[in-house]
Length: 156
Image (cartoon, rainbow, N blue to C red; front, side, top):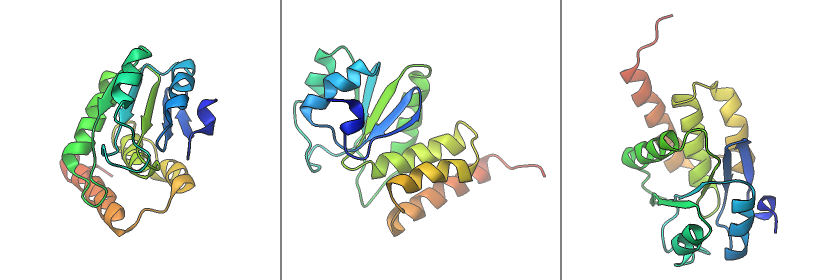
């Protein structure tokens, strides 16, 4: 298996791989792609989730970081935990997944804008390769962007 065969796989940069839920046989391919950590934003009872994921990831020598995000209630605390994990792993190849790469694509979109300073239009291209956020997620995205603007006023 190759990492690109994982559902909704999208490589954002050399160090940031995203996808939906991998099957157990995909994890050696994730390791082979050089990933040093797996961040899981899905809930333990998400579609196709398997209870042994953390153990399997660790057995392959990768770090496992669960940040469960409720589909209908994404929280700023989840996003901050995600940012902190990526910051700590900076410079290392990381694989981030959820059930279908929808939570992940929204969090990565915000990370690219709020932490990496990339233009919204550039980050939006990859977000829309995965999905057009529904009302809940668009409100979350807008609230996080608005919160950031309030904390860091721009001078024009």
